[in-house]
Image (cartoon, rainbow, N blue to C red; front, side, top):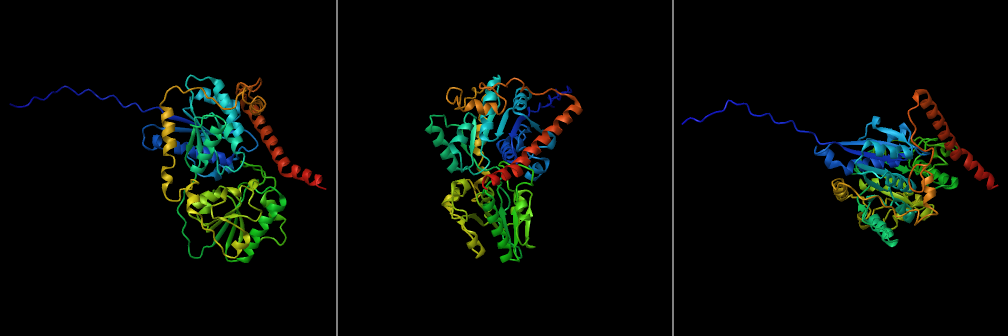
Length: 460
């Protein structure tokens, strides 16, 4: 018997409704923290973005202050996956209004500790019916103010540690004061990457990674510059690069009162032809580096991740203010005298394993735990009220001053007159921007020129 066929049209399938975008905000207060925050946001949302299950929209918010990065600094950070038209400068109160009005699902606070604490209290005071997940952490090596910085970050849903070593220390601090340590989550520095080191015939490049505030004194910074220049003269066929973080007048995470550029101008005898000052993205500089030298820069971890020979200087001592004490046990501590003679340090494998460097190829899994925790929080529905360790009860002599610096009252609400400004037209907006830039320039001039002059006068 022939089968019957139906002439009735099949009902059309309803078009698939695309899932709503995961809305992410990164709040940063300097060029380095912008890099950390933006890349951290990408790594935490990699599955949602990469597998197409849910699109991701990341907005960049730069907290207005002395270290707000310039367009040049933002460009030199490198590709972070955030379009320029999704980056804007805000005050603390404007940021809180943005969280209230724009419906972010995830917020990455890439700020100095006091800024994180202020935003946590400000966010708690919003009393949103459904608040975003809050993530914070450290930009690099944590070698000073461990307890202070950690307690100022307490209250976030996730406090990222860049290594197993840091995660253990972070939990010990929280548990030691009776605070909940469950937010501490081991991950890694988000900007590690690049091809493993391979020497190239005919290439011999030494790079010194400068730091804005380490060392701090003119004598110490001049000493390091002089030894670097002498190294270039001793090895005329070697390319010697001084990798700088910023140009004079720009600020980074730390204040730079004595830029190496200005010290180099006054160095007796000038600079040899094989010595150069370089800027740009650190990863691109490491692409052509055969030896990375520094006092304690996080660039050392980037270099070690790529298995580039790396040296941590002991010339000025191994001291906490320099940060090179962090590298005790690494096998990397050495001096310019030994480097001049051809010595190349070999890193200790056990030390590397605890530092999140992941030179063993495990870096691709470094964010799995953190990503899973964030995903679970995003899917949890209504989250509990943010509960930082510091409150007007536990720290009445400390917390109000931190909040006031960001124009917040002790209860986290904006102080009178600190409300986000309304649109005032192009002319008034341009005038305000001009005044703001002039004030920032005056501040930087004071830090880099006036303050050192006053200190020199005081030493007479």
